[in-house]
Image (cartoon, rainbow, N blue to C red):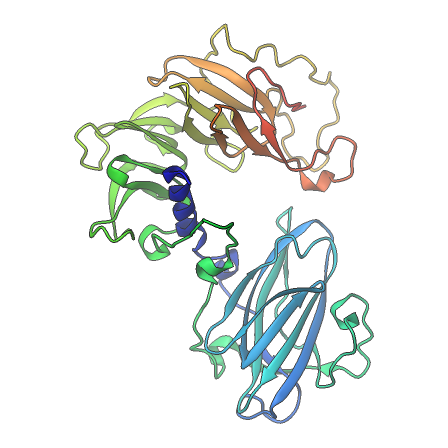
Length: 432
């Protein structure tokens, strides 16, 4: 395994071990619940209780769940055993690829060994359009002490005759379990092939919610959190875990792309001249930018569909990719692989997106450019994307990216599923 691959895996651990979107909610609506008998917050009969609830999603969706239980639980979603846990900590489960359009069934087998008993689920289904469906335990959940026969209870349209509404014990902050430890699963939730290892190398307390990062000189990590300045992340005591940060510059923030080439950091973010691609040299190796030089200013600002990553190519040139809402002010060289991309534009009057998304955005749409290290010459390499966020090269020097269409266009004639594109020079991927 290459050192670069090991480094990328470790960096991913630092990035993904941060907060889930669920924890960003200002208010937790989930309640502790149990089977309705006596006072389970103080004492409940030992044994198993089965819980279930159905939720409807109208669009392709993703999801996540935090589950806690006194004493033990097993969670199924849409008939798939997602995981189990219990005790004095909660468990985090990624439900991507499990929840989706249609009826989604959350089902739990919970066990109380003795004393107080409770189940807590703070879950969410989120559609591709951003609509959120809370799937929290509450008064609408059903429960039974009679063991269900077969697996019908894990599926939609199950006859809940004989089941009864749960007893709501209360909110988490006011419950007997308010001190329960938060467990995001850490690195255990990653599934790795043989020979790979993953390790948390920087916690959220040190680096925040990172958007992008790159390796700098002397094994240091350069990173940028959303809305924040660029930082150098340092392993001061050499134990393999980063423990200190230095502000590389406060003049460029909110970066979506970082690339260190020798002593020069290329950064895509908000700087003194607005959104753009900036050159930040560190000639004296003090982990601070010596100056800030604007190389390219896009027509649009930073954003979800704006300018994205910058990478160093195996040919010694740099490559910059921009989403479909970000044009480029620089004039492409006359020998650019991509030229005359206006061919094929629909003639007016043209009926564009009925939802109003990207109306008026013409070819070339999302683009990938090659440029000289000083930023003076630019070539349009590959165009016609919707919103390719990142790019990378394989060992043969082939360039690849990932792109997708609007998910509300699923099953329409022009919809193309999410895809990995081989970005050969001169390719036009059909933005119209």
